[in-house]
Every structure is written in C-alpha cells, then in structure tokens.
Amino acid sequence: MYEVAVIVNGSPAAAAAGNAAATSERTLSAMAANQADKRAKRDMIASVQSWAGRHPPRGEPHGKPGRSEDGARRRREFDGGVVTSVTPMSAAGRDAVAVMRTDAPELVVPQLDVRALARRVALPAGLVAVAAAVVLCSGRLGELAHAFERALSADWRWVAGATGSELLSYAGYVALLWFVAGRATRRIDARRAVEVTLGGAAATRLLPTAGVGGAALTLWSLRRAGMERREAARTLLTFLVLLYAVFLGAIAASGALIATGVIDSSGPVTLSAVPAAAAATGIGAALALGLHRRGAAGVAGEEAGRLRRGARLLGDATADALTLVRSTDPRLLGALAWWLFDASVLWAMLSAFGGAPAVAVVALAYFVGQVGNALPVPGAVSGGIFGVLVAFGVDADLALVSVLAYRAVAIWVPAPVGLLALPSLRRTVARWADEDAPDAAAQTRTRRACSAA
Image (tube, rainbow, N blue to C red; front, side, top):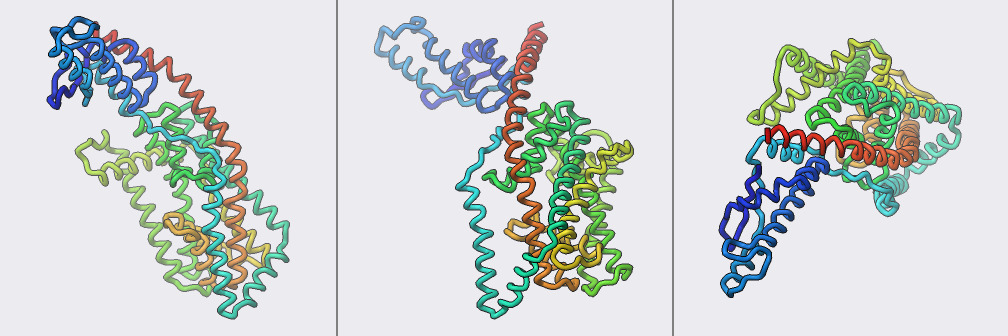
C-alpha cells in the first residue's frame, strides 16, 4: 500500500518489506483517528525504523546480532538508515494520506499572559504620554483641560446606554454567525456561536495570539467542527460578505448624502465622495462575481493562479450570501445590529460629552475610521474617526474625549466575557475531537476493506 524510501549509507533503497509495517492496522488507525499530519508521519517513520531494527539485511539471523564483523557493520548501517518519504501505492493509502494532509493546522487557544498583556498596554500608554507631553510643550494646556472637564461632566446615562449598545452589537454578530455557520454544520448552535465570537474578541484584544483574532479563530473552529478546508473558508467568507455588505452600504449611503448636499455639513466634499465611490465599487465588484458564479460550475483547479482562485471563492461566497438573503431569516439582521449598535456607542459618547453632529456625519466618521483596522498601526481606528469628525466641524476636545471613550467601551466591555468563553471553547473543541476519533478509525477500516476486496 505504501512505498517507503530509506537512505542507507547515503544511497536510496526501496524497503519493500517495510510496507508490511507501514500498513499495519495499528499505524493506519492512528493516522486516521489522529488526523494530524506531522504526528502521523512521525509515527509511520518510527514504525518503519523500528521494523528495520528488528529485521536486519539479508544474510543476518532474524533479531540476533551478526556473527561476523562484516554482518555487524551492515546491520549498523541499516539501523542508521533514515526514512525520507512515504508514498501511497494504493487507493486506501492515498485516502489515508489525504486525511492527514487536509487536516487543519494545530492552533492552541492561549491562556491569559499577564506580562504579554502589560506589553500590549505599554505602547498605547506611551503614545498617550507622548501626546500629553506635546500638548504641554505647545502651550495648549487649556484644550487638554477642557477635554478632561468634558469627561468629568459627562451624562452617565448616555455612557450606560453605550455599554448596553455594545452588548447588543455582539448579540447581532452571534446571531449572524449562528445562522451562516449553523447551516453548514449542526455543531455550531447558538451557544457555540457565542463561544467563538467572544473568544475571538478576547484573543484579539488581550491575548498574545500573533494576529490570530476573530476571523482566524472562527475559521479554526469551523475546521475543528469537521468541515473541509475549502468549505470552512467559503462559509467564513459568506459570513463576512453579509457582514461587510452593511459596512460598505453605510459608507456609500452616508457619503452620498453628504456629498450631494442632502445633509448639510461644513466638511470637504472629497472626504465624503471618495469613500462613497470606493464603497459602491466594492459592492458592485462583489455582486458581479457572485452573479457570475451562480451560473458557473466547478471550482478553480490547482493550475489556476492564486488571484483567480480567490476571486472564484469570493464569487461563490457572494452567491451563497445572496441565497441566504432570500431566506429572510431574522438572524440576518445581526449584520445590521453589529454595525448599528457599535456606531451607536460613538454617537452616545458624543451626546454624553457635549452634543452629537448629524447622524450621517457620525456614520461616515465611524465607518471610514474602521478602515484603520487594516493598518498595522496602533490607534489607526481612533485617529481616523477623530480626523473625520474634526474635518466636519466637531470641536477637537469633544471629538478626542468621545473617540477615546468609544474605544474604551468597544474594547473592554466584551473582553472580560471573552476570557470566560475561551476555556469553554477549548472544552468544546476537545469534545468534538473525541467524537470524531471512532468515526475516523471506522472510515479507515472501511477503506482498507474495500481496497482488499
């Protein structure tokens, strides 16, 4: 079933007799049940090398030391052989290797690292200290004092409402994820959607995950739920298409209303017209890909370029999103709730500290500022929102204190709850793995039986 390549004294040899060890019941069951590429290959190599130690080259007594100096030398050479590759020679063997190669990479949900958290907080704290020093040195201490005065005189009813709005925002995210992922796998129910959503929020904001945040944790969870790699990626992308359709639509609508003069504002036209045009272009491109893929069949082959495969995957996800929209499931409103209630936090903070501008201006500032999430620069979101608000006539001190308060609520309200969700998510994934192990072993035995027949 397998051909095992071995290096003996620097030259390759086909260890045909080693195939028996490589295809044993024990090895193949471990391969399929484990579903971990590196571990399965390591077990197979160890099995073949162990067999090599028990079966010396021809001319040696089985399992006994060589009786001649030449025989002992040959045995040492064989014992020192290194397995360099494992090649499947039958359908069952190819199936087993395919199981290993399509498994999701190991991703360990991390524990809270207080030192790493302190390091993450150190940079924003340092930036705040530098900004305060600049204000003090520039002689504009009065503006800073005015901002603090606004903060102390805030209407705390608006602040409490902002906290509730943030929780409702996450409820919308959970509902949409439950709807989209739940249609692909029964394992993602409402509770699992809560675990994935809040766990992703905590991993992004508090834990040293090297960039693994909400989307990456969601993809990993879908893979652990038993979905194939392409199916999991397509499901996640469908979810993101639905979510960001509202994002781009809000930019296009608010920007168009301001640029055409329907909403009276003192800001520059280009700051509203350019984002609106870019958002409309993005919506049109995604719709074109989705409508094209609805009439097409098949998937991009390996020979297709990466850009072409990505475009086809986006088209498939957009087509799936259009199909889901026609279902009129109320959980689709979760996409609207995610953005609406989060933007309401910013509006509530502006109202709490002095007075909010027109709703279209707040919406444009919020959504354009969110583009800063794509920039690997600390404070990009806050800076973007602050800049747009000031450009449209909001007082700098009001914009500063409101944006900082909005970011504090958006980051720290879900984070403690997310920390509680991470252990539950780890237990859920472990239970899925235990449930899948017997099925994987049974599939391996079935493949082997069919191959033997």
